[in-house]
Length: 185
Image (cartoon, rainbow, N blue to C red; front, side, top):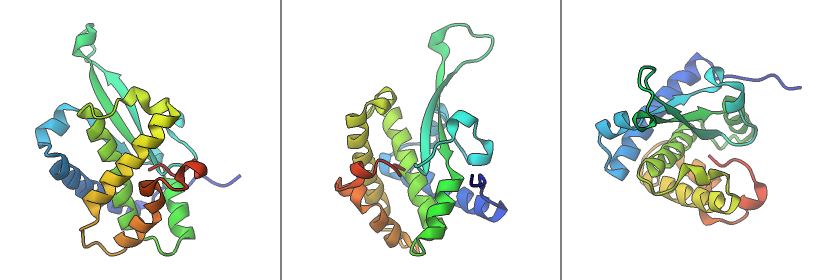
């Protein structure tokens, strides 16, 4: 069995930079204020900090919705949603190593932008999180989110980004991605 791999310190710095960039791009695209993001919470974690059930094989990341509330408030009306973006280090590292045309920085930027687009759509009620398990809706939503991610990123001058956009082209076009059944984000 292959050893479970994690991002090293240098890669974590690159993840942090990609997070900041993706947040700004998604905020600008959806016209979200910083307060909107803070009110509707999300968190981004790499594999080292994921619970066992948050680790998956195949996708580069996934979004999981949690509900929370303060300990001293028993009413459900005070609950808040927390969307956790779970980066899958082994899948990301593996594809970057196997595909020499893909650079880690733009690949991370795409993945994080893609996942934050999902979160923004959930928060804006453009797609219900509860529909994620319904296969047909999931594929349609994935195509939509890949299209929006491409729209957000295509004009940027980031070395290696065009190769990443080509890599995800089949998802955006809806040709062949469903048959592969993997690498959603």
